[in-house]
Length: 310
Image (cartoon, rainbow, N blue to C red; front, side):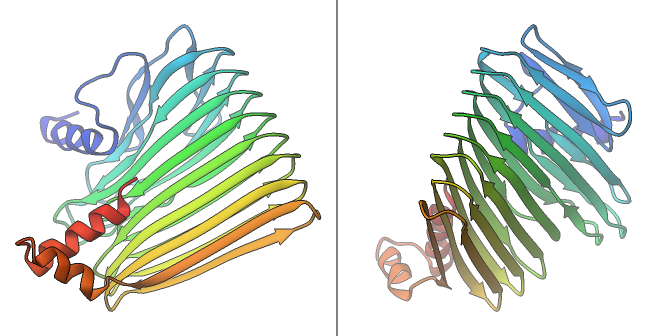
């Protein structure tokens, strides 16, 4: 890796995963479609796939408070990176997984990262997953990030996913599917920012199969300029369960937001709720902050930052 590539990669990885240098513990760092660094521990084993690009992450039963880092980055134009990462989380393990991807475009050609992540959460396991996406660079080519996620959560398992698209991504389709079994919990908190002519599409489709399982989907977004956001969430309640889907969006400029929360109760004891709110920033909010000495632009940005704060 040449010095310029390393500099850009280090910048992206620090932004998306808060890493400054190599971490302690287990990690896999991906740069321009290849593995730049990898390390396993006694309780977390990372193995490259033999049939396609990607890795398998095996977390032993009863592992406690491990942190696993798997950031990826693209540092130049004309890269098309497709990777498959599978997480196998053992019974009663408690782990935090820090992912994220950044795409740097320096020319007229687009670059794309598509990460296909599958989570198999064992009985009683507790997983927190953090993922940030960003596009940077002065090139005219598009920065494209298309994450696809599938999860299966076994009895009394817990998965919380906190995902953010923090700017600069020109086109993104974000698909999340999965199944929850008895007593399982899934919480997804998504934050999105689009501007210019950017396009982002989010699709959730979750099957709640087990008794007393629960799911919460929360999407908060800001659409600026002429950008377009499309959101659809489907919760299929196939047993006695709970489900909550919420989509809140702020529009700035001529942006468009299309939100479609869908609930399907296939069991009489499925308790499902959805909410959707879309609108501009209220003028009185800006005026109130201006009385504190902020300009209109500063007031608007403070409101947006507070809205998107996880």
